[in-house]
Image (tube, rainbow, N blue to C red):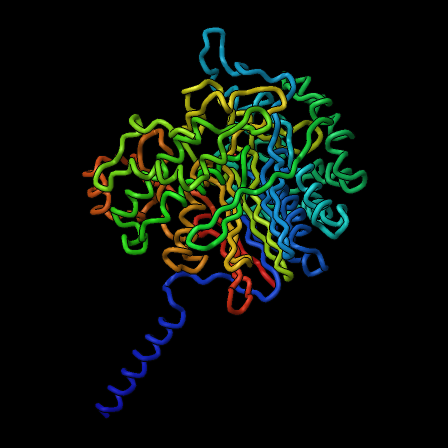
Length: 568
Ligand code: DON
């Protein structure tokens, strides 16, 4: 009897050990599927993408449909009134970045957000009509489709149109974000009526219908994407702007162009990194940081140990100082991108890192070559059955953008103008200090931190990831990449792991609840680091990995928010 009990105990322990050994981690496992996978901030939108792929569409077709669907079901950040970047790698090896970043209106000017005494006018660049950049999303989706898609435009708009017309159930997350932005949304009549239910507010489970947005989407289906820039929609936007002191004209809309840009590329420990070039700073900073980190044995330092966090922070501090000094719209002034992403430059930058002492940001400068919530931008990643990969980040900038719905269109408009330098040396809403390179000029694109990235292993797509979070985007993508490559985590665990953030100025480490032990924080303080008063969650990464052994698509949606990976 005793023997039998001991034997069964032994068997139990053995089973547990084998289970632990075969699953490898105590973390959530990614969602697995054979053919295709969409990881996005909304289960509804992810399912839209899967349906498109089931009907024979590729990852780019799905990306267009998901982008438009998110504009309906995830209005805090999903949009057709904003802009973003889409990094694409086709299975045949072609790569590109679709830059559909917003543009300053033709009448925008360098000091438009300063009063007569040269002070930044509060809210001018963040709330209301003057904060809006010319939206790029519709043009960006259309360009991606034209170059790499296979299905008809109207079939990709249709799911979004249906969601807008028939409505979808309001969930607790949407209610929370609507509450958080209530005061901004209530200033604009259409926004108040649509998103605040005329001030009555929504309850969980209510159906949110957006008939004007549905009508706009129907016009886009019928007349094509150009309708947004030249048709009735353009006219409605321009008229509303003119009535309310906004700067965007019909001519601005007609002149808007989404463009293809050559992705930035490098290798990190033999993995190929394909990422976004300016006017996002994300790719430049990511590559500069990876280059600075490559010579170190990060795994040996220990994940989120004092040594590891110290090193990450020192690297972040340097890359963000360079971002502030040098980056802006490449169409307006030459940028030293080649220098910033060269290994020789990283070698020089690295030499100033002291492992025992934080370098105060005031001493850093650049080299030679907030109240905050992180659901205000959104990323989705898609892999199809053929192995085409799309990594897309787009945004209205703040939650619900400028707060403005252009009258009669149902379209929430961005406040991307705040990503420009309102005044050199004065921080923007993300606390970022910016330079002349990012000053406002007519038809210029504001500097971004969005970092939709694709990583290859042995020449084949391995994983793709991106995140919202303003400046924290870049460091979120960095840490997900390090977690996978240096710490061998699965993509879900790599995304779930607590992150840290430093952006040069303000000179402090931002960390997540339960992210760093007290001992670690004390050890870092002894090296001269300062910390944000309170920890807070950062980012909402959405990633898909392709298992190199089995080819399975492994989808991972960040546990910090309510997203969902769906595959088939
Ligand atoms: O382009 C950028 O860097 C910003 N407009 C992104 C804003 C953002 O991620 C907001 N929040 N989570």
